[in-house]
Amino acid sequence: MVAEVVARSGRELQRYNCGQRIVVGCVPYRLKGGIKASGKNIEDVLEVLVISAQRKSKGMLFPKGGWELDESIQAAALRETIEEAGVSGAIESELGKWCFKSKGNDAYYEGHMFPLLVQEQLDLWPEKDIRQRFWVSASKAKESCQYAWMREALDLLVTRLQSSPTKLEDMTN
Image (cartoon, rainbow, N blue to C red; front, side):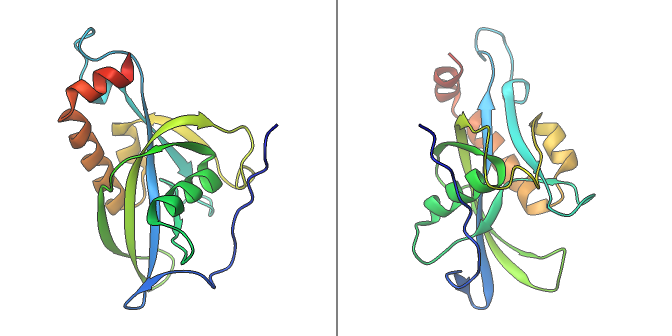
C-alpha cells in the first residue's frame, strides 16, 4: 500500500532568524559503480538530483523550502526533498549554513543544506506536475544550478565524499 504524500502549505509555522526566513534542503545523491576496482574518482561515480525551478527558465536547483516550528531541521529537509523531488533516503550531517538574497525579491534568507543518499525514488510526489527532476553529474549540476550557495554545498559534498574512500567503496558495492 502506498500512502499519498501531501505538501504543506502556508507560512504560519515558518522559522525566522533576525527577520530572515530559514530554509533547508538536500543535495540528493547516488553513486554508481565501484571506485577502487575501476580506478574512478568521485566525479566519475557521483550523480546528484536537480529539479526545475517553479518559474520557467530559472534554471535548476536542489530541493529546499521552509523549516517549520513543529519539526527538526533534518525532518524539514527530508520533507522538502520528498515534496519537491520525490526522493527519500538517509540524511547525513549538515554541509553548512549560508545567508543569501532571494533572486525574486529583496529578502534575505538563511539556508541549511544536507546530503541525502537516495534510497527511494517515488513515482508520484506532491510537486510532480510543476517540477522536473534530473539525475546529472556533479559538474553538470554546477553548470546548471542557479544558486552559488547551492553550488558551494555540492562542492562540500564532493570534498566530504573524496575524504571517505572506505565509505564510498561500501556504498558502491
